[in-house]
Length: 327
Image (cartoon, rainbow, N blue to C red; front, top):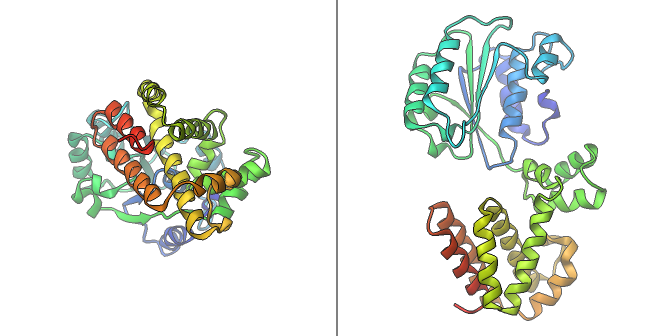
């Protein structure tokens, strides 16, 4: 896996490649950015580059090390991921044991800790001790959505690598190159994913993002009819399938956002749901600006309350009734 093949993130890649070229690779890096932006993808590519002996500033993709790395079989690379909801202290203790040994084949061992914010407090404190006195020839790569969810002392011992959103054009080209749907679908997904290639990739899967989007528009039709009994039934269905709710709220938010933007500008170039432009024109005509702004605020409030583990069913029911103008 080559860094050159990772779309976007020109500045982070330049920083990493300069560190390689100047021989000043840090013992720990923290890749942070939104979910789906490509943190693990770039960290994996950097790990491959660190281990490869043939490439210059990037992995060569052809040597024995690179081939085994791509297959997940290289002995000096270790991937630590959450077991269930957390990375547990037993996993970090096992890391501590293996880190004490010399690299088997490469010049260094590389540990990639994905979703580092899920470490239990004991696991985080154990990792901190390792970072305070890191073993020789060992490099740690951590990824997180939010560095503030990690111990400040862990963050301070890592070189930060901040990843921003990727351009729509680059994501669209990636989807087309990898045959993830037809050209029109690639354009739509690249628009909907809001600069997150991982999200676009997942949405291209059958019955994933676009399937959820259809659920959102079915919900919106029920909201327009203000049928309270139907909305309560829909809340019950969502309670049975909570995992899709973050995406449902995100897509719903984008739809109300598009109505507001269209009502204020009538500029198609600013619209995200470009394939629904006719419905958008019709709906925005009978929605006043204050309702749209209030609806956007209500959706954002529901998202925050769900993240705080407030009563899920109640949050969804109240949101639907508010959107329908019944509360």
